[in-house]
Length: 124
Image (cartoon, rainbow, N blue to C red; front, side, top):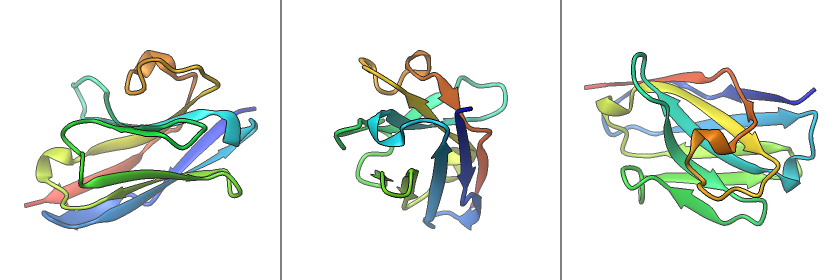
């Protein structure tokens, strides 16, 4: 059974940093496209960053130069390094996986498997 488990969320002040992790199991992690999404209650889930099986990354304009997505295929783990966090980025962050091919890398419909999410709270 495919499973994604996020960790690393927490509370930080404006300008702070966090590193999120997403551990995958039950599928061949290295061959899957992976992505991070975030969602605020009552709002649409937003694509934050994605990385293909070949390591090529895509970012939402709002996080470029502040967030870095990476993957460690030896550990079946996806990461999201977040710097200079803003209060508006308070959300539940979740990871997603797709066997591919993925055309629109930040679109929810491209991904088959989802984690439960981890809360990130940025205070002013």
